[in-house]
Image (cartoon, rainbow over all chains, first blue to last red; front, side, top):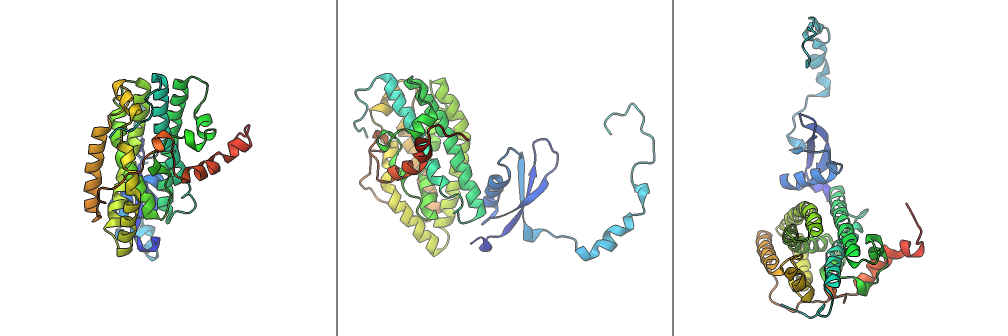
Length: 94
Length: 260
């Protein structure tokens, strides 16, 4: 039966976190039931403050074969990391 | 509609009876739902059903502990759950009905949730602080139970030809057990007078409204006026309860000192 239900990816924002994080996937008949199922499967131990569900079929992902052209060019550009200046001692939350 | 029962009891024993009804409804339905664990149609439903079962068993513990306190004979929730026989149970007949197919389980849940929520909403304003506290915690859980069971009734009723047929059959089968939920007897009336319990008339209004609305969305036909089964609240049960208790109570009765 579950083969007939679409797959949904579940993102939960935890109580202390700031952004939604992918936690796994579930099957559900539609968006409303997907929220319910996500709640029942992934927030049983007080993990959640907010839930997003997205149909897995609607997610566009990069192709594994594109790894070289997408990600290798940034490997030797360490100057993009903010590590080349001194942080004054007075600055606390950086 | 008033039926006899509880007319000659003291105030404390009426409270005890009333709390048993609240606790036993939750306990028996929780036990019924637990039987789906390992057998539910899909993983998501298994988790959801187990969650509802655990909510209900937690509520049962609170109500039965309070019942034991009110009774004052040193019996706690475990004792009341595991050492009473069927005729001492005070749950409504609806919750002891078999799981059947999934449509039956969902329909039983919906018909009960639609009663349970307005009941607890009233109890959350009870004059008794202990009742108020348990109800206030439970009401959040049950609001979700009702949302979920309503959604399922709508999807199954307005789903495929087969799901519609099965859901209508479940509704027709279980309808005769719904009258008892909202039929006030002497115990119910005494609890309203004491300011502890819920007035079942507004509960019945809320129930009818919710049921009509969901059945319409589900394209299901509300059964006509018919004879309503009663007796569970007074300890007269269908044949099913004995089997439920036999399974639930076996271990603590056979091994009274068993510990986790």
